[in-house]
Length: 261
Image (cartoon, rainbow, N blue to C red; front, side, top):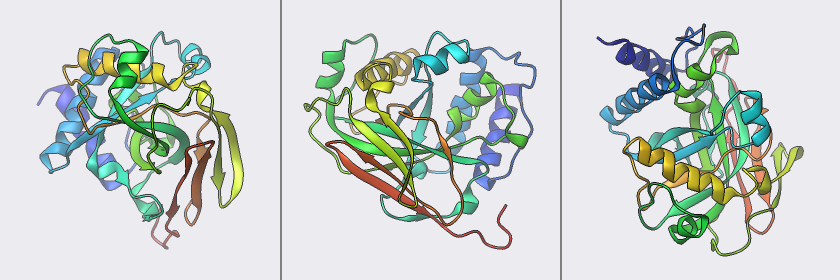
């Protein structure tokens, strides 16, 4: 078994069983290309169990975060059907290890999108936009990880919730939003935090997915990245996003049972 496959199976098992695992790259020696190869194998494990690819998620879409992490580009992860959570439903808290949540804007595509495209070309491929939430969940013990660790762990992808879809031709460049926990505002932000305009995140997604020979497909969702800092979430909470002009989305976390981590 190759090291890539070994690490992918380790991380897939950690996500599948919601059990923290050791770091695979504590010294930060893996290249980003090697980390993405592990991520690809990890997602193939999900597909082998019958999960379908439904899109991609973008990460580190804040310029400040990119600088902090020493990056010159955003990172990305793959979304599968098993990660999608219906708006308003209750999610079993025990399926997570270290869950946090961030508010985002989501795109759904009506035609393929690949390679180096312009903002208008990217927008022309969009069927609709929606307020959304992403549950991110590092699977590493003690919440310690390097950048290659994060990428290999599918950019911490764990779950996503999408609100009502809207016409993408409204101006969504600077929509105010709040992330709320149990009805109280936890974070305040704007869609402008996403590379200055969320469309730039979609442009980056088209480029990166094409470089991986996985061009964005009709019907796929693109999660554009966190518009605020991520908030820790706990059992029994109701987490929601309210976004100017686009509406709201939310989900409940089940109460912790006696054997829940």
